[in-house]
Amino acid sequence: MKSIFTRSVRSVQGSILAGVITVGPLFVTYLIFSFLFTKLAEAGLPLIRFFASVFPLGWFSNPFMESVLAILLTLAILYVVGRVTSVVIGRQAFGLFESALERLPFIAKVYTSVRQLIDTMMATKPSSQRVVLVDFPIAGQKCIGFLTRTLADSETGEPLATVLLPNAINPTSAFLQVLPISRVTETALTMEQAMSMLMTGGAVGPDSIRYSSVSAAQTATKAESSQATPETR
Image (cartoon, rainbow, N blue to C red; front, side, top):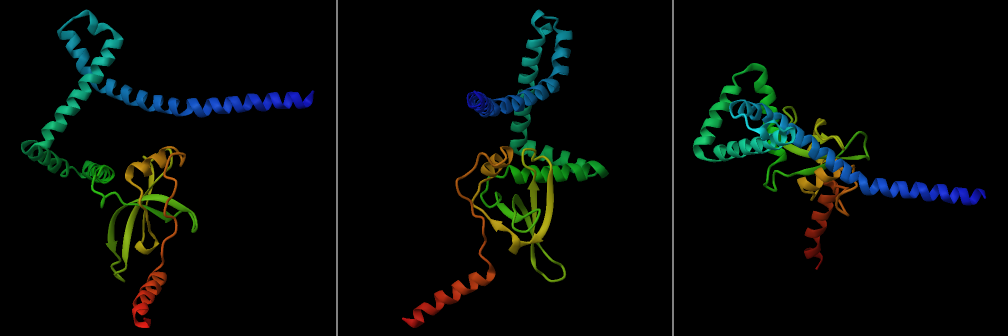
């Protein structure tokens, strides 16, 4: 009797777990799109309500229609802004706008940092999409990071790297590390693959990844052996 009850409990647990695995990604996707649509609607609602006061039509007072029109209006505004900034005149006007922001003491620091981060994350050139692994939080445990730039130690001249380490599930929060570039392991991951791994906690990603890096001593040994081979022949 006890074994039957145990099997029944395990069967129920397995079914619930299978349901969570099936519904979980759909639920997370729903939450993300719900958040985006809510923010788009909130951005466009003031204009829609202004139009409703000027043009008192019946469908303007419908809450559902208000939200739909607000989302479409916000997307239209974003599209127009994108098109305007993509032409020469728009770029010049946007450059003037950015130069004006750079004159503001506190806003300049925040805007410039966020803009550089977005440009790095959204870059399409392969050279800019440098997904790396670094030892974090302790040696022997690798963390996915984005190599944002390289610089040199002012005292020794040693090449250094600035690496952004986003947190899993919530990549909007991150650590910034400055470390010797020799401690950085280059990978073949694209930005999309790295973001997928971070957003899903590693559940979605490639089947293989470069984990170990070749040390300078090993590289020198290989070079010496390759040079010595023709002489022996």
